[in-house]
Length: 343
Image 1: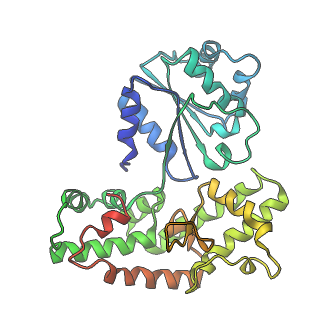
Image 2: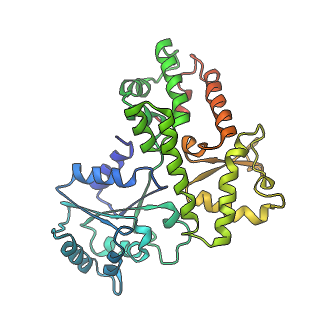
Image 3: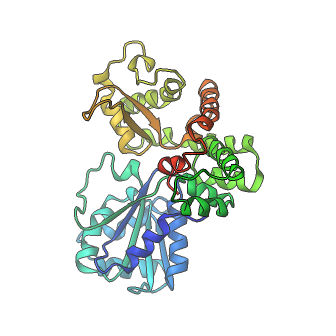
């Protein structure tokens, strides 16, 4: 399944000012897949190392950090020579080896002829770090769930995506295309942008099975809360996480702390909300009526499909919202969808 970020990876490879690349994003958005595809297509060889799968890899980064020595050890481990320019080095789940993150600085300074990309969950890369970060020595790319345009291409509607890309006037969209786009947009709201859910729908056309895929993804996130924070904080984060779908199902979508627990107060949960924002799992949406920041805000999930799974009332409200989008995308405003959902 093609991703728009692929061209940015190609641009990184060709850049004269290339630095080690950090590809970050929430779990299950397809970081490993896109890096492996990039390695297979753009390089003669690919050296892939997963720090979660083999914790002993971290031993190569202990003591004095020497990129040359690390490369030699990794070559022996892989039983394959790692050569500058011809081999793409991939460090996956790098958040499980803080010393490897620190080593990126020395790869840039002393071994920048090696093409090195690393992937990690935002939960580990941004939240609760205790080791020095290589500030100014790395390049960042963020991978998000599929945009509407990527979704269209992912399910085989390449023609529709190309049509929207080329549509640069304000003339009405032909009725046949408009109806199909509205139908697909509503499906996109329901399925969401997680690669596995889109792939399953493409091959099976079964929304009930898609929901099962989404439930599995959704259940995996809370398991990471306690891994990257204290137990009391993890309980508060879980409370917020579970409360958001119900809050968004209401007419007034302002975030109310009393929905988490009867005696909840803002001062007790502000850090927990920011933790979820930093991890990439939610987005804070501020109500702005004038050019200044207002205090009233709501919290929205990073992926519409997965997050409303299992919340009956929230699902009903979300389906009604998807249906109501028809009246917000009239024939004489064909670029509205482009402005909301990148093509």
